[in-house]
Length: 353
Image (cartoon, rainbow, N blue to C red; front, side, top):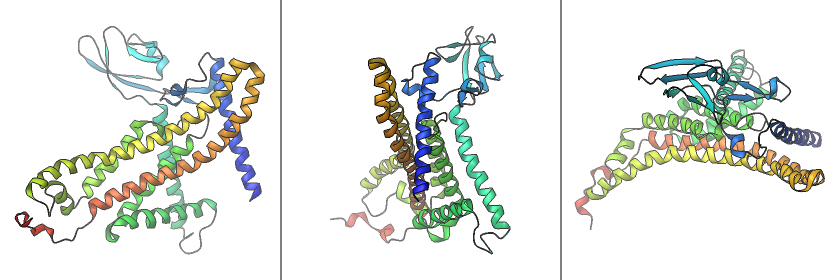
């Protein structure tokens, strides 16, 4: 146990120091190591260890451009630099803009957050496929599960099935949602954990990513809705007619607040954790400017130690937020898919005193 904890501590320490080295490399290139929002923002490149290809892999750009005459054309490029070399675009303040009176109509370019979204969801799918093949061979079905990965998979799958899906959705409907919940949980967990690497991006710290996940949940909620569910929204039973009309607006607002809360909660938690780590490590560079090398080394002891603690906390928060997003999704879907049994449908509002 002690040896395991020591390995975890050394790993977290390596990640913390590596993050500092990443900032130092950016400062050497002329960027500000304390550009917090620039660090967590979406980019047109992937960050990698600095000794490989200068620390960046630029991603393809796919743009629909409207020229001065109003004609729209599709412009694919290998990366932003290639686009800037053409006659149609230039880079202004690190942003690609159209020239000669043109206008970007749609920008479908690949970005760092999109890549890590694909990495997270792709790894969740590959992990599931790999484990399913073992079950098809009888490992874990005819005999006990073998290996650390399969045991972890079984624990997580059973947890999502029993404590998330079946605990919140009617028994005869719950199991059909388990694949969705498990994919969502594993995908978000992987995206959150990817953000622990100093050169990686946290896809869930992007509102467009969390909003997309929330919109998917929103549509599943609506398609799962029963007659009783829609009846409670458009003609709430057991209340006077005037209150029924008022409740329509209240329930419609409630339809939108559920996915909004899902998106904002996940986004805010993951973004704040990333910013906190960057800000604490940034103290090293602030003290270096104010007090020189001695000050930098002095505060680095505190900054790196605190960052190690925060990394351990972020592992927990990353898994917790994946669980909360999945759990609330199950709660909302369960509320929509539930078959209500009550006698208020024939309630006569005129009998209210």
